[in-house]
Length: 247
Image (cartoon, rainbow, N blue to C red; front, side, top):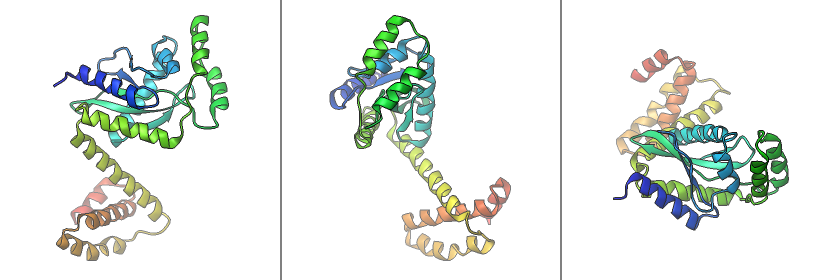
């Protein structure tokens, strides 16, 4: 099978061929120069390479890749310069080794405002670099949110299908994140009312039939509600929550 470096090159070529613009690989472990694919945003290419801006870019990409790694899904962000982007992690033995970054773009109707922001945000650079950045600024694409989500889904699946990221591990991480998000949303909803002891134990009456039927979906939904009420009742105190779960 292709070595990891070769797999990443195949991924960059694939994205250049099928997406509206290319992507770049940014390595973290160990730090290496960014490897842009064909069609990658020219403005971002300069920023990732220039000493005055490269550190800003890497920090944002690294932070975004970390968020994507713990959620198991693409991370969308606005960079320090004011451009929109998304990033996905490159994982090696479950460790964050790098990221695939889509590069900068504008949302519809925001190009003029964002261009003005970029000119103010850019740190002092030599006149040659400033001229190149100005030229590339005029070539930054405008993408609708639906197109962006399609590009992100493509890159996410390509990382899995090429064997760069482990499908099972990413899936487990995503399920864990969804569980945490569901509980957080329910806690927000229940916090407006009162979660007493009876509210927790009343759930058992409907949980037992679900367990007997082996209705996995129903049981998981009820467990979400159970943990939500326990954490609210215990005011997030770990020892009290453990005692409730044990009981």
